[in-house]
Length: 526
Image (cartoon, rainbow, N blue to C red):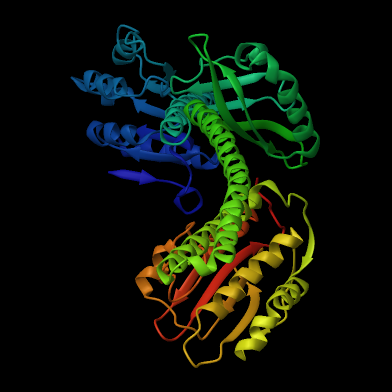
C-alpha cells in the first residue's frame, strides 16, 4: 500500500523534497501522515519493505522507518538497497524505535552499525521533535543534491574540455597546420596546437614572438598586430617562422578577434598554414621568369640589331643588281633579265621581313609610358594611314563609339591599323570590303573590342589553333596575298603586353571577326 499526501500541490516537486515512510501499521501511518501534512512536508507512506526499497531507488529527501518493520532479514535488505546509492548520496534514515525489555533498540542499533546516516527517535513521538529532525535531514539532503550538481557540472566541464581539445586537434587535422589562441593585446599566446609544423604550446606563453617569429619579420608582424588591435580587424599576414628542428619556414596566418557584448576584444582565434613549399616554388619561378625575361631581352636585342645590320648589305645587293640591269640591259638576254628580277624581288622581300622583325622586337622595347588613349582617335589615325588603299578598292571602314583606355597611344594605333589592313587585304574577289570596329564591356574591369570583315574567312580549326598569330605564319601563299606574316603577331604581342588576349572567329567565305580584350585599368607588362 502506498499513501501520498499533498499530491495536488507537490506532484511536480523533485525527489529531494519527499519524505519516504515505512509504517506497517495503519495507526503509525495515519499519525505520521497527519504530522507531515501539518508541517507542509511531502510524504509517501508504504507498508512493506519491497515497496519501500523500490521507492528509495527513485530518490528521497529522507526516510522514516518504524522499527518493527526491520524484523528478520529486513535490515539486510534495507542496507543492500541503501548501498546502491551513488557516491554523493547518503539518504538520512530516521528509525522510530520502541524500547524492548532489555532497554535497547535492537534493529535500530543494527542499522547504526552499518555506517549509514541513521537517527533514532523513541516513541511515543513528539510532533515537534519529528518535524525538526526531518527538516534538519532534508536540509542535509539538499546539500547532497547541491554537491551532486557541482560534481555533475565538474564532470561535464571536464568532458567538455576533453571534447574541445579533441575537436581542436581535429580542426587542425581537417583545416590548417596550426590553430592558436592569443590574449586581447597579443602579449600572451594562450595555446597553439600544431600538426608537426610548429612546436605546440599548451600553457600561456609570453615569449612566443622570440620562439616562433623570424627576427627580421618581427617588426612588421608587430606593426600589423597593432593596426589590427586598434581597428578590431582580421589579422592576416605571410611571414617566416622557426620550426621545431630550428629551420625556417613560411606561414600564412589569419586570426579573428572575439568580442564581448560591449565590443571589446576578449581573445583572438587564429589558424596558420605551412606555405614553405609554395614560397620555395614561387622563388624558383621568379628566378626562372627573371632568367627568361633576360633571355628574351637578349634575343629581342639580337633580333633588332641583326635585322638592322642585315638590311644594309641587302640594300647593297639590290642597288648593284639594279645597276647591273640598267648598265648592261642591251647585253643581257631575257633569261638574265629574269634572273636579275628574281634576285631583286628576293632581296626586297627579305628587307620587308627584316623590317617586320625589327617592328616585332620593338614592341617590347618601346612604348613603356602609360597614358589615357582614346581608341576613337587611334582608329581615326589608323584609318588615315590606310585611306588611300581603302579608296582605291572602294572599301568601307566604320567604327562604333570606342572607349578610352590606359595604354601606349602608338601601339594602340598600330594594333588597329594592322587589324584593319588585314581585313582589307584578305577580301573576296569583286566584293568591296566592309570592315567595322566596335567595343563593349566584357567580364570584370575589361573591354572587349572586335574588328569584323566580310572577307574570305578561314577554316574554323585554323582560327581556333591561333597559328595566324605566330611570327611569319601564313595561311595563304605569297602569290595570292602579299605580306610577311608579322602583322598579327605584332597585334598579339601588343595586346598581351597590355594585359589582354586576342582571338579570331571565322567561317570560309563569310568573313572573320577578330576579338581582343584590354583591362580598363591598363596593366602594361614588360
